[in-house]
Length: 216
Image 1 (cartoon, rainbow, N blue to C red):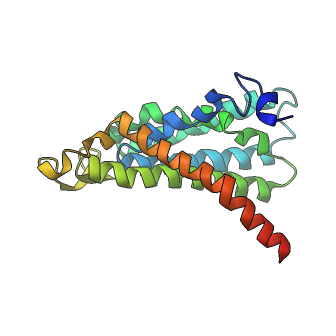
Image 2 (tube, rainbow, N blue to C red):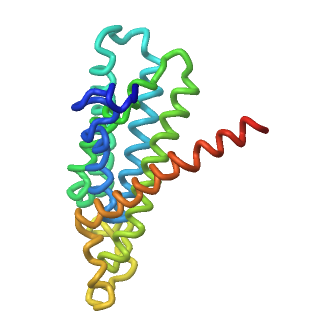
């Protein structure tokens, strides 16, 4: 029987809600390139340290309620990152606070907590960092498209205002038709096209590459 119909309609892996995992974080963090860079640092910090601390301290942590322990640990580490960011750049945290809070739930919803194994520290940390880098690459790719085309700017963290704009073409009429990319609807549009391309690759191209590797 088809696994799609065996999956639970609400929280199964083929349910519509499962596709929304991390979408809020991706849309909000990719609004500006500066926000995307901050989110990249937060993802690497939270994913990597969560896997490292849990793998090293699993003997003294409760054996039951693993998901709760990992959620609390990732939330605590995310809070430390936001505190450090506040000390370095108080104005920047005002624009990143809300989507940084989505990182711990994103870890839980993405299945990252299920892959953290205390038996192999190096493998757990490397896998965690790889997942963080992949998610960060998606956010950075969307940000490098949305901000220049939608707002006519390219920002980096820093400066007295929290963000430094390298150029400002927001008054140019040529950028008006693409300004939809700067809002959430434009981010969802790009994310939808990207998801469609990913599913096409997974369905048609990935099996061919696996067959070719087996033949070799």
